[in-house]
Length: 512
Ligand SMILES: [Zn+2]
Image 1 (cartoon, rainbow, N blue to C red):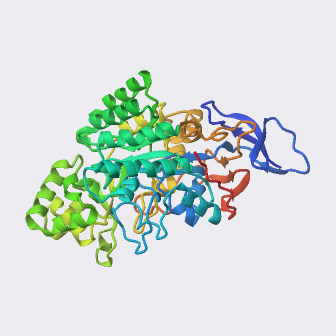
Image 2 (image 1 turned 90 degrees about the vertical axis):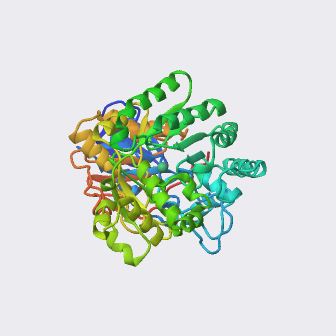
Image 3 (image 1 turned 90 degrees about the horizontal axis):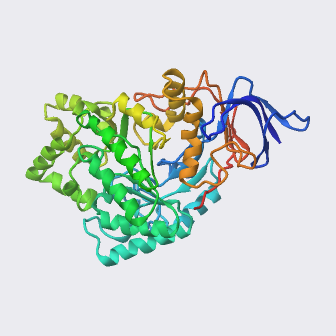
């Protein structure tokens, strides 16, 4: 048995810290309180340190990373991740022997062997082992690519095929359905289509998470749509990475939050999540009008070859901007010729090339076969504070590791949240902060016996120094290990000990 001795324990329910020992027996928490050490136990001195439930990242894009055992989440204190967000998941997929990248988003090609249901994903995880526990959503965009070509309206047969495939994924343990309604190809799914799919989610008693149709000028309409789907299909709704994008829209945050609060009062089981950064990161195609992307990446590239269409796309993209081209930083390109663009703003590149910014953006997309990632400065600190401190908000990374420069959230989310916003800026008390990193998240996804430090729960635990917790990871050099995180236990085993990876893969698939 392992005794975490004499630490400040924060249990994840929202309660503040109290002096306590935590006794771990096998995979479980055997006892919490004042426990006299026994000579046979492994006793870890936690004097001056904080003991908290392992962090639960309910909005992750580590679908591939967890199979590759990348440690960037674990080192932050994460013990459970929910992958398959924003409409993107590795299942359901057909075999894809050429590794073709179908939608220009997030994953670098689909798994060559194909994963028709969640079984294949969880089996791969069990075969390879996992550093952390993993639950997996079924992506709406993945369902669309599985059932049809990249175009607007699904036929009745195609819709039925999506329902059937979703049923198969949910039956095999997927945690629910995610959408990415301004990402390709999910953006072509209308409210009726998503509602129909959500009825399957209801049937299996799971959750609907949504990267909404708009976070900019039409963010309020997008919230209405998410809530309407929740009402009609009677499913819990999780609004992903809540924010309003661009200074032109910042005043819309208050009414957006009011809509969510009102819906909750009216009986919709809605909550939200947020990452503790002012900038987001995604494929640059998200700046483009939807029609330009019909037919997927191939359709887009064909249009960009046509000078008239290219000009129209650039003009409409410019009109759709809620922030400025100074706020858009290129962080991922494929070609060696354009590696020099990494870390530069589109405005700066445009000045260098002597072109207009929107024209420059569409040119870069063309040069890179549509595969460009950006970091986009979207949020105000005031609004970030309102969302992060809101009682319905869980803290998430939204992170993924990419070639080029990953967003720093991939490496530093939880240490930044706790070090900067909780300790230094005192935006919220420690007990409430830890509820947002664990207890609330577990509740949303019904992770049984996880997310709180209670006798009988799984021993997913993190031990950190609240005076030192923090990160040096920033937009220029994101890939840096966190500071002040000493021990991480996953299902009762040390995955991180004295700040070092042990190599133990004690993570479990969490099947819904
Ligand atoms: Zn998203």
